[in-house]
Structures are given as C-alpha cells and as structure tokens.
Amino acid sequence: MIAPSILSADFARLAEEAAAVADAGGNGADWLHVDVMDAHFVPNLTLGLPVVKALLAATDVPLDCHLMIDDPDRWAVGYAEAGVHNVTVHVEAAADPVALAKDLRAAGALAGLSIKPGTPLEPYVETLRHFDTLLVMSVEPGFGGQVFMPEVLDKVRAARRLVDTGHLRLLVEIDGGINDDTIEAAAQAGVDCFVAGSAVYDADDPGRAVALLRERVHAATPHRWTA
Ligand code: DX5
Ligand code: ZN
Image (cartoon, rainbow, N blue to C red; front, top):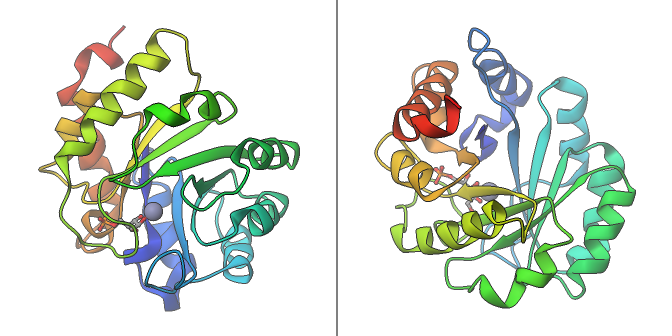
C-alpha cells in the first residue's frame, strides 16, 4: 500500500492534490496520509479536525491520520467519529493506548500506534495486540523532506516476524524519507504500507510517482505479490 502524505502538498489546493494521487490509471493511492501536528508534541503546527473534515468531504481515498499531538487520549476519537479510516497516535504521548485503541475501534476506525525512531518496539508488543496498524517513524516526526534512518528497519523486521508468526495482527507502516532510493530496503524488511510525502508531491506528476513507488515495492519483494 502507498499512502502519500499531504504534508508536502499545496495546502491551498488540498482537494486537487488528493485527486492528483487518487486514480493514477487504477494504480493510485491506497490511503491519504494526513499529518496533524500541535507544536507541542512536535515543533511544528499543521492542521486539525476542521481541515480533516473538509478533506473527508473532498476525496474518496481513505484518510490515514497521523496525530503528532499531546494528549491524544482526549482528541483522537474525534477523528474516528468524523470518518477517518485509520487514526494513529504516538505511544510516547498516549496515557492509555489500549483504552484509546478500543475507543477508536468503537468509533469505526482502525487504531494505529506510532513509535519514534528512538522508541523501542519490544515494550509495546502486548499493547500492539489491540491495534490494527504500527507506524514506524523513519525520521524524527515534525517535518517532511528529512533523510531516511535505515536503523529503524530492525524494528520493522521484528514487527514483521511477530505478524508472520501470528503474535500480532496488524499492518506495518513506515513514515519518513521514503523515496525511490529507500523504499526497496523498507519493502524487503517487511513494510506493508509506505508513507511518502516529498517523493510524491515534489514530483512533476504525483500520480505517476505513486505508481513508480509501487513498482519498486513489487520489484523488491516479488515473493509477496506472486503467491
Ligand atoms: C513527518 C511526517 C511525515 C512526512 C513525511 O513527521 O510524519 O508523514 O510527511 O515526509 P517525507 O516523505 O518527505 O519524509
Ligand atoms: Zn506522518
């Protein structure tokens, strides 16, 4: 799955930017990744629920909201109730991630848990049994266009093993620095869903960029797609 991040899109033309990746000749975005930042959990400020609601009305692509905010226990469910497909909170910010996951699911969304590059996976394996997606950050959250941190792929491999052996049942998602040069290593480590911001929206043709990233994934992991 490919999830373009609108953080690198033109915020004055969000509906058109969503449409630019929606189809791509039947090869378009699976999800649209929306980065919500509060200038507290991360040193940047983006958008919140009113803009997300406007985007929900403007596109049929399922929204993947990545909440880089303090106190997600208070705010995240509103995104699920609004109709966001997957609502991801940070384990470093959530007071009670398991209760939050239950609330998100009860509101009809998938529940996602994200870990920053320096946060280990192992202490949260039991917590992750309540989640549908694990978002492994491959840059420090806060800004697009940063350099991919390959060392986080150890956590991707560990998560992949836990899923493949039946200990966890979730999608492994990666976010940060994913482009033509880095996506193959991430695919080989076992990622299911690739977030890409600048690699998609800085391209001349964002739809084509999505299709090309998908081709790279298929080329890197043919055994996962031909079975
Ligand atoms: C960063 C965000 C990312 C960002 C990725 O904190 O979570 O989703 O848009 O941008 P690129 O793909 O440019 O690294
Ligand atoms: Zn993100």
